[in-house]
Length: 239
Image 1 (cartoon, helix red, strand yellow):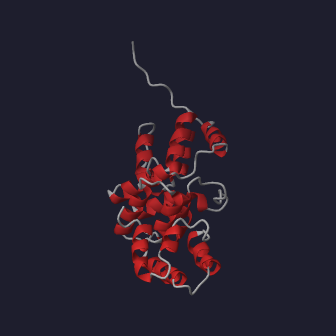
Image 2: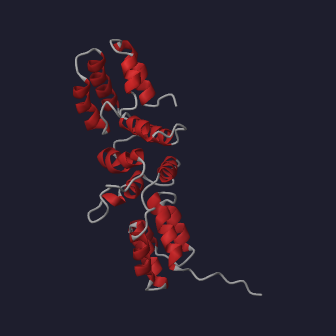
């Protein structure tokens, strides 16, 4: 009996698009899959945004697939960038499989006009911070060492989103110095918890009630010499 491949349906493209949006497939991995479905022009692969390229390919096979995919994606609740996806994309970056602009394109697709603004979109605040704040503000300034540290943070066995977000904020030396300055003022009694909140809310989106290192901070009150060790812990330098 002759073996024939099942016809490619719109579900195939929906699944592939979700994998890209969540991050478990990179741009190049999506393109490789699409090559197996229909011939592609190199110029399209180089310049066309991934979801648009996928829509174009689907429409070439069946013009009805475009609306099928739009309908399925618009009703889906599993299209947000995920922790697994961030890990996959960072691994691809660090092995040279994707570039930093391609990482940025993937991580910030939802920040574009007329797309979801993020409210209620992410289920992981560390992933939310990475995609909506850290990369948009400084993706072209981050070094490979910092990207490696970000990957280590997301792979952390403790999987505490609050602590992971704190560590991501502390990727930069400037933020580490601010951490030492503001927390030193607090443990020396120069500022109140409410005054500390101004810094915590601005930098971490947390007050002193939700800041995950508050008990550790309270344990070293009036001992500023112990603060660098707390910074080391919060930045996950030793993880």
